[in-house]
Length: 218
Image 1 (tube, one colour):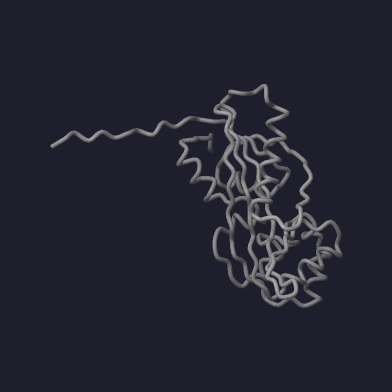
Image 2 (cartoon, rainbow, N blue to C red):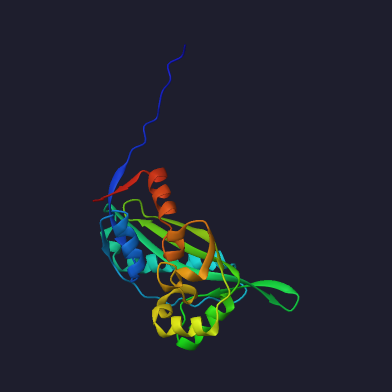
């Protein structure tokens, strides 16, 4: 009987950096036990019309990571793994007789937040979070995304006004936080809930395992 040879996966320990100002992403990583440093970055998150939504969201996440890489290029080839992300709500809509999709990012005003919540009321939508990982040691990017289906119940004008008045919607994609006051708006969710909050932890962990990238944890 021939001898079987098994290839052992080599794991490498990396320092994890989070390129984000989002307290939700920070909290998700902390609850999962990850140790990391925060390197906030701010870029334009405007999306052109008539572009593939997932590709557009991945492009924003990639741009965030790339900005940190540009600022810290002298750190190559250290064992640092950089994580950037971007989240948006995608709502199916009809433009005349053509089915289209509208991207809802963070509302800039309370009026915009009211509009977003009115659009989502009683409807199903997708929450897409793109992540961009950069490995300083190998000088490589990895861009991907996760999608979660969410169903809202019908919302009254009073509910929308009360929620907008709380201030919570103003820095949230789609103008709501599933982990906060909007929990009661959701009647069904299909997929990763952490993805809706702002970071698909299951996808992130899967990438770490498959690539053999180990980061410090509590």
